[in-house]
Length: 412
Image (cartoon, rainbow, N blue to C red; front, side):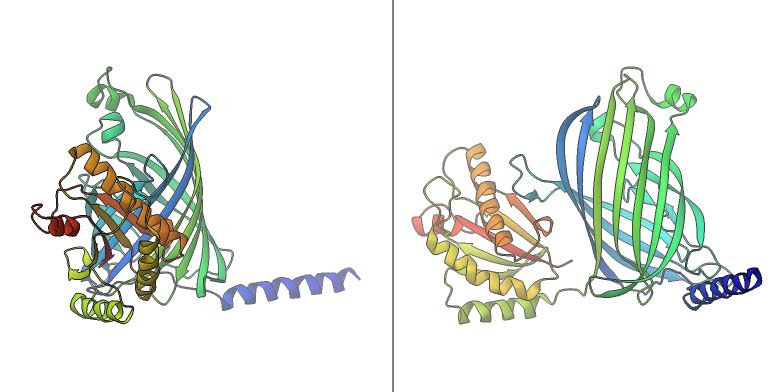
């Protein structure tokens, strides 16, 4: 009986081994000259100060990536140059929309195994060398480790001039094939723990006693990485994190949250064709007082003389009908993010004009989000007041042109 049990046990183990071998994969980043893609990530975190709840933050990261200078030297890993633009935005004080924020450039090399070469002058990306892969094939259940680091931008919070580097070691496990959001992908889990104390010699050399700064970083990140073999890149990832900063004053800051990111392949927007197509659709829908033009950011639809109740951001019913029709146009370009800007005529104070223009941009954005045109973290708003007139403010007709909201279909 024991011999029979032993035989079946061996047979079972052999079957498991054979199944995992069938799914052995070689994981490598692939690079093609001229590749362009966008990464949209969304973070929701609860912030605690000295164990007391402070607030919940919603943060979106919008990253555009251009790949160039692909190199494949003999007997060395292939690599490519990544030229990126990062834009990080929190929802505005009223929690309505994500405002378009300052953009940060970053240039680095990444090799086929995932290793970065990046100058200390760049603050983005925050997490580097995740994932990294071994040289050998991976079967289901295989684990491996790799070193990485986080680079934090503490210039505004603590006045630190350089990226604040926190090293870590990641443990990876290849879980096997999976289907997510209609893609056939390979699931890899990644987990790392942060236990970093700022060396005393660095404190003495770079951090004056009057400056507030973190002396110790603790935490955990657990990630599901969804790898697309066809493109040789991540398609998306999910993360749970818990980070604690202990400051030189003894104060403690905790950040507990989740994150999700998706990579979207992009082709450069054919602006001229898009302008022609949008104009044709606008004509078919019977819309008036709308101009379409090429801009640096993409293709901009300008809604002139958009009607709100006086001195407010409450849209009149006639404008809601107009936005319903424009929603049909915007849905034709669902892979593109939207930038919505508000503009006023020259009246009142600058502070009042700026505030009103942003509120009106937010009102249009909220309506389009509620209509399902885009997810909220893919719609950005700005208010320019009367700083960007399209006509002199000398007649009521011209002032009506300047009272406008513009919706830009962003190129990348």
